[in-house]
Image 1 (cartoon, one colour):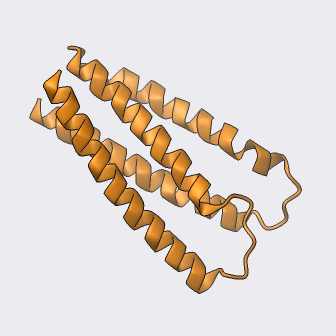
Image 2 (cartoon, rainbow, N blue to C red; image 1 turned 90 degrees about the horizontal axis):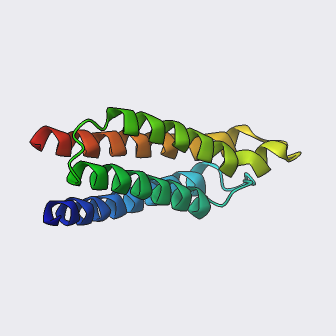
Length: 131
């Protein structure tokens, strides 16, 4: 189980760094180019959602891999579809609202979504290559 803990702590540290950089860059871009735009979701809520979901799903895959299950492709696919479902649930108040300017909010959500997904896939494939 020590390899599980090592991978987990390493991933948490990397995720914190990536999240900080992405959040800082995203905040700066919004401050410079969209300071007059009103958003439905605060940026911190979007990043908190992505951080928690990415950490949770990586932890599940890491635990299953450490427990001896070497074929985790199916689990990864199920978790990816679950991530899509959770994203829809997260966006449901926004989708059901009468908010007029929707494009900036969709970009605010889905640009980090795909960046976090890329980071998650990269991290998982990295530790699977070492196994």
